[in-house]
Image (tube, rainbow, N blue to C red):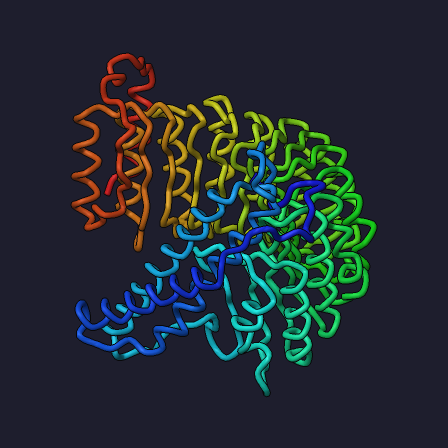
Length: 535
């Protein structure tokens, strides 16, 4: 995970400085460049080139200024700061060049497209969005400039996204004013990735100021992802977590949610009963931390959308989550991707899934369920989740052993639209059984991923025939198999005949040379299955 700040780094010392004459000279050069490019390349006079050049220079200067005190290295003597001056000047000029290039492109696009005005941070009258590819350190002055629409008289935004911009303490105080000006309408705040590159003390204080600023409004949704702030960061959000009683959606993805941080969330979140969406991802939470998350879920019976992917829990953690999610029966979406749930955890989840009649989306990719648990999960979904539309069982170690019962369960999924079951070593016979099950279900499947399953020919043909029989089919993934050249040609012919050639995904990783090395003793059974898929 990207680390946004360095523990113990000072935040009050700004050592980078350049003579005013040099700064003015850069502004003059950039203003002249903007004017010249506008005239010679587009036949137009770009307006306010001086003001734009001054803004670019100020932004570049702030990047170098912040960098001068946020990264410690072994500096040469006599630099007067924590980064050598030559490096900071290079950073300053490089950033100025990048911003100038972006401004030239933007002005050029505006010149070429007279049907639309220049874009700004606001998506519409209700939504304000700062996110972009340009990662910028905000000073107070810059924050006042970009947040001006929020602070305008009569502003009434309900959704604000501050992502990809780094707020220091002074800039955070501007956010407080901006939120206060929209207090009666503000409902959703996206605070993901807003303290990158700041020293730890400054970053935590900025997070505290910004989250406390939400108290002027009744917030229903908050995203704190990609700040990698750990327990200290969670506690920096204390006032918001304790006093915002109507939070329905909250995200802590890529936030360093350790066992201690998870315990802090459980401790501080005052109204878990309001939660409908709770997302965690790319955290090292582990089983002990997942126990705290499970306890929080027990207090959130109205949960609709739960994600805890890449969190390093095992079967014990899965049991905690199954128990917590069993407190309600309203789940619509579940994502536990990339955790070692294993067999025992799979059994526990199956018991919970059976009691979720509204479930539409299940992602259990890379959870190492094994054949027995995969069967129980599939059966629970087939019996208890009649609205299921999306099922991802990629890399679940199903193996041929589990296929017949998994296929039988799939045959009862009447509303399934997407099935991903790659990387399970199912072979031609296994995939043919799955395809027949999908046809028997009569489900409106439009996307099928059976890549990396040791297919040689007839399994791929079965998948193509299933795709050809389904109206509106959009995606068939057969890559990473051992499909023979003859098999590839037959698949393409079937897809083209059905008018869905574009639905066949690229097969760059298919290894036809391996086709002769795979023994298949199930030729008769395969032929019988293919007969069921006759077009």
